[in-house]
Length: 202
Length: 165
Image (cartoon, rainbow over all chains, first blue to last red; front, side, top):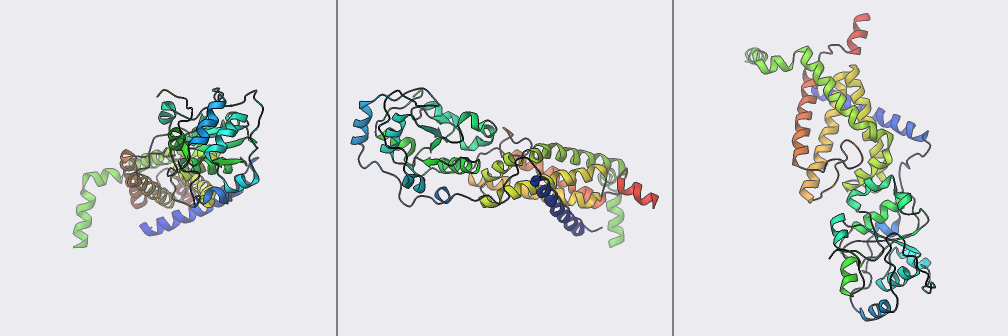
């Protein structure tokens, strides 16, 4: 039998095997969606980056009024939640400004996820953030719902407006069934340029 | 002269060794075993393997799940056929196609400067993509090519059935 014929035969085997896989998938208790819909708000990069460092003063003064809870994971505080909950418009846009993130962090109703590497996270991160490095997302996947409740308001961020780890992580979360996922596009750089509180070793 | 060249090739000790029935059988079992081992977790958890596929950013996200299923099942079916000796040359052909695809994908991560889990064996915390993986895959590809060219089906199910008939 010729070499080419073996390759064609191999291709036929792969097609049949794929058919078997699709069949077996359909009888699984939790079948994989064969053609997952990619949520548009994450798929398309925002046309205008969220608040650039145009006016860091109001946010900085807002932060001095209240202390942010430092407990990782949940940023729940006993303080009354004055900030307006996330609006439908914000959900639709898929992103959140720094001022809104700051206000929401104080309400303790959101889960903040740092999509950068463990190393960068340890050096410094936003208060209360949980580290889920996008590049190692598979390692976190099996235990994800213990780490982040499925119905949580999730905000992801990475280094700055130009990084895409936060978008990628948000997309994976949505594919995993999370419905309320937003991206804080300014990220670590915008936050630290505004002299807002951080946690970490540096 | 074609006749002369054939004689020269078949008297090459390496070729004689590599094309002996027992060596081909061992290569078949090794390559098949490796792929069965690498595919079990992918078949059990295609959702996790799909995440590894998306990390490569080579395919539209909408196709990543189907692709993950296709690769996982192609691996396990072709590897199983290789071990049992069912249409071994075609099975080796499927393995070769998969290896070419994996190697190209890994090479693109190097060119793009992506440092990601390769998703080769287990879904979690496997080895990172790198040059060593490409070298390893080249050896595996050579094994598949040898099987395609020379396998005569020693100790294979196909041979058992053809003898009976």
